[in-house]
Amino acid sequence: MQLSGEYTFDAPPERVYHLMLDPDTLMACLPGCERLDLVGEDEYTATMTIGVAMIKGKYEGRVKISDKQEPSSYRMLIEGKGPQGQVSGEGLIEFSATDTGTLVKWSGEPQIRGTLARIGSRVIQPASKMIVGQFFKCLEKTASNAGS
Image 1 (cartoon, one colour):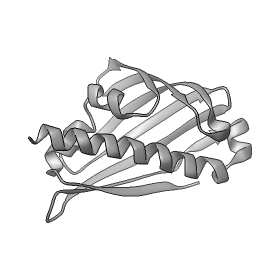
Image 2 (tube, one colour):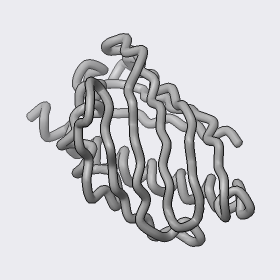
Image 3 (cartoon, rainbow, N blue to C red):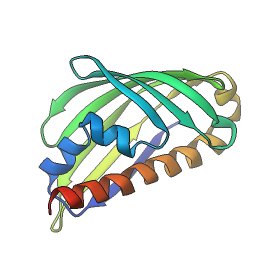
């Protein structure tokens, strides 16, 4: 299953890039994020409570940032588990300047096991789109306020 999307910010790429790597901003903007702890260089453990359809529950995971090309891209490796299964995968986040700000493109191909794998894309894709949408709206407010 492929997940991807894009979001446009009214802020320069450098600001958006740094905000998307700032642990405090991520914790504030990731829906349901209860904990985000640095455990190594560009590596974090996280706890999130998600309440969407069959994905409901508390999930524990790790996130590793790699291949940073400031301010144009980075890769994100994730692994997590919760009451409905396990998820792992790699995503690419790309930033490009527009006439009015920044276009962020994201893509990834998660590997899903457990109940989550059985319900598949009919629940996971809409849920991920909703969660990512909430994240980017929060991040947009933060980016706008940081520029004031």
